[in-house]
Length: 108
Image 1 (cartoon, helix red, strand yellow):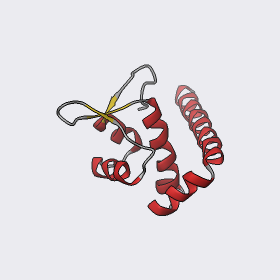
Image 2: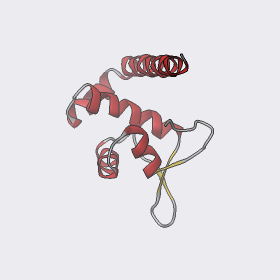
Image 3: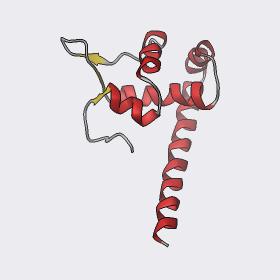
């Protein structure tokens, strides 16, 4: 299940389900990464826009998939932001191809 790019904002549970991480992890990342700051309503409920989702994707790629420490991911984002953006686009394209092939296999 992917996050709809048509929606302006996503709730915490939607984002956590998409990235398969607990809410505490997402809240922790928010406190550690200065570039990641979701909007909140009067009650304090977090709402994530597309820019936030892209930032979470980068953090997820570094921390969960490439096994960087939090400090290592912060430094990597500062130093190699362009390369990380390129790698993230490649990973997203590969996931789309995998999803297409999986769907094709099911239809055969």
